[in-house]
Image (cartoon, rainbow, N blue to C red; front, side, top):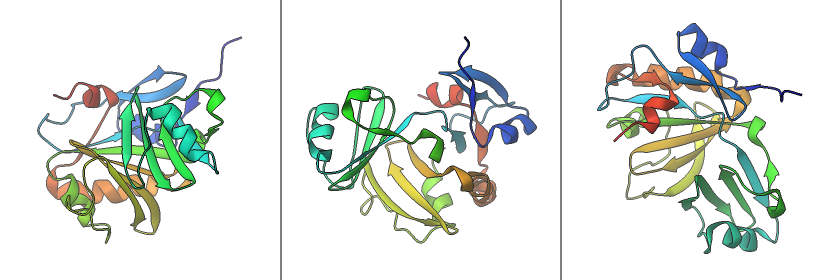
Length: 200
């Protein structure tokens, strides 16, 4: 029996914009846009296909040590083994990427949508739509925080080459439009996951 194919909440938006859609890990994913953004420009990439898990409770420390090989301090991101672990509170973490069922982590993939905002003006674009202090001295590389973007509660992750933004799937179409509007003056363009994986 063929397993069902999942679809993210932005799929019809990608099709309307003539993105090439393919199946990846059981999800319909926008893999490329015509034409792709310039490699030195600003791009917004839909990562809603990335598996997402929540770790809660008194065993959070032990679970993260087993996943990461070390403790994960509060408000930091541990990256490795094709996943990013965001430590939000002493008893709560979110894992973006696959984990073993034996960890006890709860699969919350359908409830979250993740976007990558990439490019030299990413911080300036976000500064137009949030009062959260995203300066690097406040939100350092491989750190995370939470706050609103136009009323949408957002989990921010800062990486060397991008921000990753994680929101409730019910709000992501509005969220996408807010970011694209804010990025228009900076030439922000949608891009597929091939563009993101091929950077550098």
